[in-house]
Image 1 (cartoon, one colour):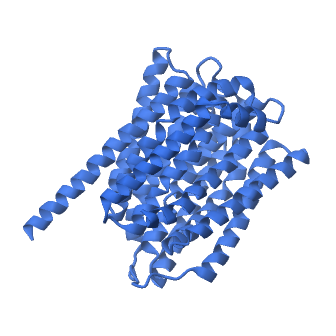
Image 2 (image 1 turned 120 degrees about the vertical axis):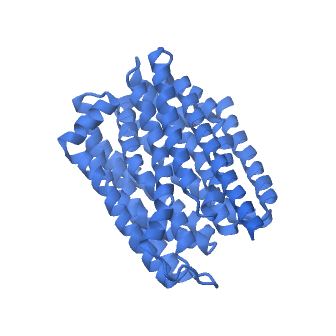
Image 3 (image 1 turned 180 degrees about the vertical axis):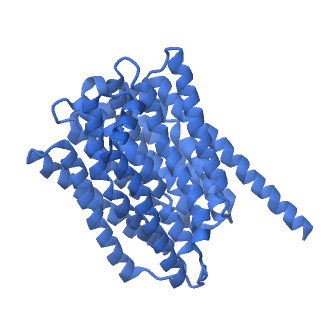
Length: 426
């Protein structure tokens, strides 16, 4: 348990540092005139951008698993560079083209002015795809070498740079898109440079070299299913926003959901670090791993409830971040429902970790796809009957993750049954 904790807590703080940057972005937007509109525009733009960037979320696991020899590192790095370029190109197309504008306008049911603002964000955000892919690749190597303390320090550096950039940009009177995207781009570039320095100085390859004859086909076989999982996660919010935007006070509701969802990500990111947990420690001592994950789950949920049920939410959202009252009131309802999320996510990630170690990632992709389909159908049903609002939409999001969890549990169970049969034949 002590070994697990010493490995996990820096990664937990890493997730916290990364998502805290979004909280400061929301706080900066809350100080602009027409804050509700600015928050909603950023929510729609970032949800669209997130659809593409989410496919990068498992690059750290990819390099952790496969970059375990000089040849494996070379192949893996080349694959990541090519994949990130291919992911970025469609995003640029959506940001620059009239067809992209038509797609955004139709999907989110927004007018021309809002569509152009969303497109402007996408154009500026696109290069972050390339920078983020490189950062994830090197982060995976640091985690592989159990240099998780450095990972945390590097992400604190990122958070600090974002905060400084937001403060400087806002005080100089720059437009929101330049302040938010500019601060993030500079921060991630400097973090990437620092990460490559740490890797060059402290990284040591595994004692037992692996994947010395690695192929791009093998990398694609692992990466495509897990990237599909990330993409489906990122698609969950836009699907909900597409329906919520059509209800009365849709822009207000989207702004509130973004504030609450972003805050809940502070805790969800901590839960997501268990993917590294299994890749690094393997599948032995499963009862011990389950006990450790249960303790973490209880702690995360308790902190969320403390925030939701005490004046702490008013202090952070109202006094510190300056979130408008009508947004804050709705967001508080949403965060109460999101207190269910850590349990669902950690339970799901227990099976995600097992599937990645076994390199049976197809079940993860299927689960993600069925989650989005379930969210779409439930949101459509609630919208049709006129009962879709910030509360029911949040419940739909949770139920979507429950659907995904059931799928990956079944995939892991089937894999175990196949291994038992194979052993019996031997």
